[in-house]
Length: 190
Image 1 (cartoon, helix red, strand yellow):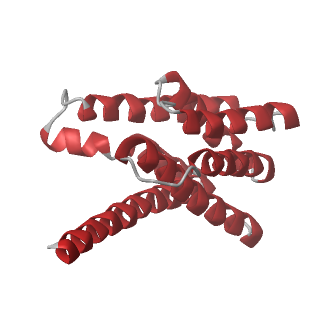
Image 2: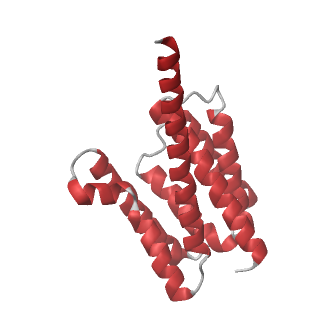
């Protein structure tokens, strides 16, 4: 993994995790993005296209995740439709890069497992330790780590790990900031 490739992977993963979670927070937690949700989704779609085209080794992984979220009905808002639609349209227009189909299927299965298991946990069908564990969507993270350790292609795990960290930190900072703002408003008015 060269320095340029690593830099692209880190920047893409950080920005994708951040932008995807911001759009999620607008949709799921009524965070006011002042009408910017569709624009942010467009940006994350373009970043996916750029990453698929310029870090070709990750194309199988990114395309598998896109197909998994579509197949499980996770595109639950117009904003996410814009983001994923941009990623798919851009990839189709510019041409699908070489895809390692067995690797694509491997990542597709694990991404589908993550989505299905997290749905079961979110709906309360899986509770306790298993419910908490599956809400974290561990399958793709673990399989990319094992695959990276086995093949010495650490791009896969680095990408997913940094994406997940960025996604979770965005959630924490935005929701924590919202709580602090709400607390401040309550205390100033009281």
